[in-house]
Image (cartoon, rainbow, N blue to C red; front, top):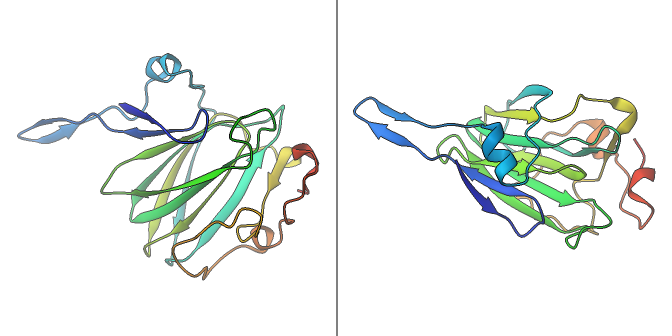
Length: 184
């Protein structure tokens, strides 16, 4: 695997190190030793798959607070998504900053999302499928979220939002309150 630091502290883009031959290629998508060597948490507690019928569908912006803070490795395995993460760690030098990256079945990239990062994505194609490796169990009492259209972050989503859950549409707007006090 090829780990590339992003502009956000502790967040990485992970590209495959493809070994090609006449059959195609082979590549490792996860290795606990390689994750540890880069200072990343290699725990996988759950693997989740989401399917999106329509391009423009938006999911997010979600995170969990301690003691259930979770890491994620996000990979688009069919179609394409625009993936966004926001650093919600008050002690981080990149606190409240965000990045967006296109993950596609063709580029086979993954995004490592550290603990206390809000995460969301928009489907860029009909039928986009996303595979999540998650480092902690889903714990509803510790779930938090941010509005996808919060003017505080001014995220530039590539498409008009055509589908979104009521829960995601109604997360509160950002305030400078402590991160753990955001509504769930």
